[in-house]
Image 1 (tube, rainbow, N blue to C red):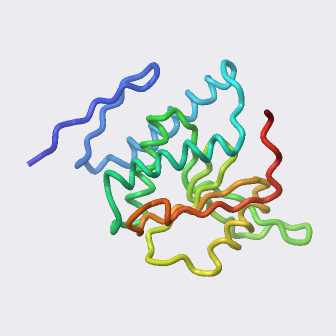
Image 2: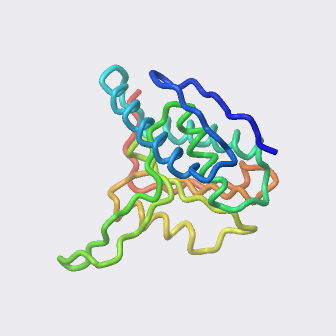
Image 3: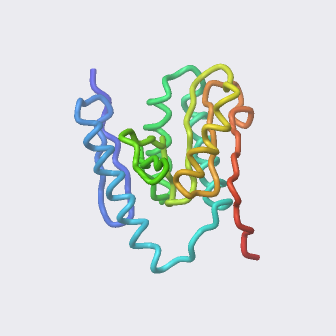
Amino acid sequence: FQLPSLYLKASRFHITLHPLEADIEATVASNERRGAEDAENRRGFSRTMHENEVSERIIGAAIEVHRILGPGLLESVYEEALCHELHLRGLAFVRQQSVPIPYRGIRLGTDLRLDLLVEGKVIVDLKAKETLSPIDKPKLLTYLRLSNKHLGLILNFHVELLRDGISRVVNNLPEQPK
């Protein structure tokens, strides 16, 4: 039994996803690159979004993912679904972004990895666990400082209502222009 292909319209290209085929990772990576290119091309025609607007759109996408999939799946499943939803909404993102860790004038050999960096502004730390640990928010704040970003979201999909699984972490967020 094989599910039919899904046909999605996205800006100037046609994407075919085969949900049960082994090459889905390559398809997702290709879609991410195209999404980033499209977002980059749009930047010349639209205003730059403030972190708050980006976070609103991320939360809307996450709510849609949670509404469709529900709780109880692996974090990697939610990451893939959220990336697809972000792409459908025209938001640029990078998965597993590597960020160097400086320490007293040197770069440590191990970089940290961000689950998602959306529109180059908002770090998204995905979770699929019963409760957040006390270190999750301070860890995201450290990620924000090291990457010189101002806003991060922890999205824990292992909750009945997603609004109970959203935490916002701020690092000197500039005011939104009026």
